[in-house]
Image (cartoon, rainbow, N blue to C red):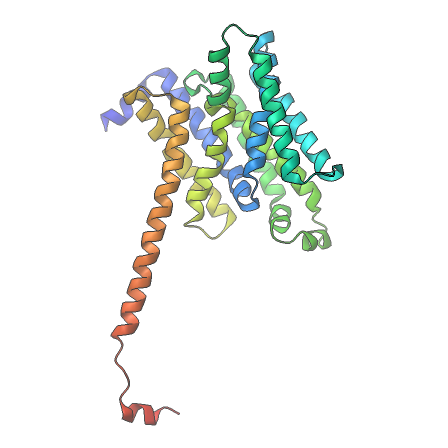
Length: 296
């Protein structure tokens, strides 16, 4: 067990662990709805929509998360506006904004003398550089996420399965869509320092997908997704420590691997159960002619 605990004796590793666990919790709650609603492309688009703001903040010497939050909020507002009033399809609108914001971010940051370093941190994060202020931000984001998810749970469920029923019940599905987009934006912005704008989508999707194989309700999926995310964080940090790999991408890769393993195990269990059921039915004795006569 010492090889597991030893790396986290370092202060920067213990902060990385705490930050990663908070990211896992936030992404588990939001990611469950992202997977349920099929909003993966939206999450990725908002992640890249942060880049211009982060680039401007980096060049100006401001906190990157402030610029990223402003840029992500603008991206979310533009998506909502195009969805309501634009003539393009929803996916097409997101795709155009996605490419446009990514290009603008790279153009802005290319003026920096440390372009390669800045771009790497923007896309993949630096969880080993998480500070106390980042942990407080993540803690606040988790509290806000839980509050909003709890208050709008019925609206989210109704909007996910039957928009007309949600409107009939007065649950305001349009407001639910706005709040869910806000939650995705919050998760992406809060997780930026840990895993970057590119890999946060992996943390949103992979644990929720892995958990969905074993659960039947939204809350249980969120809880199990948080557990899978925590395992990915610990595994990624340990691999990064001993193999000298980049921590953020390693964590995201571990989350994807867990999703693949979950799917493989679930498929294997399903096949075993089907084989046992078939064997049990085949083992039942066939009724005799006399028994068939007695059956009404």
